[in-house]
Image (cartoon, rainbow, N blue to C red; front, top):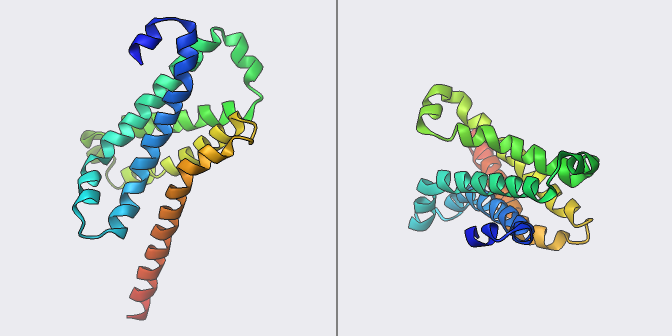
Amino acid sequence: MVSGLASGGEAVEGLLHPTGEFAARFMIIAMMITPLTMLFQGWRFPRWLMKRRRYLGVAAFGYAALHTALYLMDIGAVAVTTAEISKLYIWAGWLAFLIFVPLAITSTDGWMRRLGRRWKPLQRYVYAAAVLTLLHWAALHDWGGIAPALVHFLPLALLEAYRLWAYRARRTARRVA
């Protein structure tokens, strides 16, 4: 990737899509870890992933930041950005990135201690970032290329549906008992 970046403008354009995809993939993988841990209780691999989830989230932010920087390098001028400002995929992408910034900043142990009980609700904004990322990806391809985005996001949606179902089942069982 670095050698491609050093070789000029064509390479920047060629790296724009892969960095965005890597950002989305790392975010999705990080978000899938908790439901996988619930689904495969007692298995070692999900627990191993849980210990490294923060790294995956920070990697997602790193690729999103690189994707944003490459986008700004590719357009070359603020005037072009203002021409694209009315497009849904631009708004969705920028909003998703802006949500990522405080999540990445507060991902350290120090911020976890500083924020206390407020840390987890803040980190839940990743769900909004995920929806915006899906919108960004789908709208970027004029909704005709939504299949690749769904291939990435559907497993996450299914695991999150399982997570909600398991949460409700536990809650109902507590009320009955």
